[in-house]
Image (tube, rainbow, N blue to C red):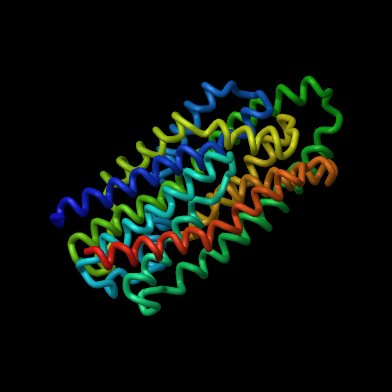
Length: 335
């Protein structure tokens, strides 16, 4: 295998992972607006890719976090640097397809970070792992769970008390219009965080191929364009199973609730992106939806569906870590 062919294969794996992210994760941005019947699926599947693409151009702090703060690529022997990144992408691809099949909206962010950590550990031992990135992951978990749920609950509660005087049909029209805006914001914020993660990995692969140091990490505009378009394509092609799980099975939503969930999740994700914090957009919108449902009554949430999703979230770290580790170990032996 020539060096150029190796780079081409790894970049292709990154793009396949990005495509699967759009295919299975980006529909989170439009699940609620479809479930409330504010937009028909075909229009929502136009809105989401466009928002993802535009959002990917909002800063590169998350990309820098992914590329520079999880594994020290300089500590990995040059001849297996690309294989290490490729092994991590295989972990994301395999787990993403399995969870898509069962309609489970898992976090591709956590899949990526776990696979990358496992592959890095197999390639060069514990010395290659960096703590800075995982500190931000922990902060991201707080953003995506505590902030998502509490802000969703508060915004929904506030709307119910401020607009109680509006007749139900009129309130439905007002929040249907507002939800189109909040769904656009959700799609935009998804691109600003999840889109940037794969841009960071793509850039890291280019850096590894050059044998350059982490201080030379720089995101090219062409990389943003390529990755964002691939994610947008994935979003436009797939994702209906995820939309059905989130928007229809977990909790019944009205337009004002959809607006509250999307607006809350958008604020949390954009705030995290501003500080370079990689969080799970899946967790954020899900917990926002739970918070909105809880503001009406706790029993409004279908906890059985929630439990199945939580299981998938908890399995993501160990499963993807193991896949990344095993694939990297195998490639290291073979090559």
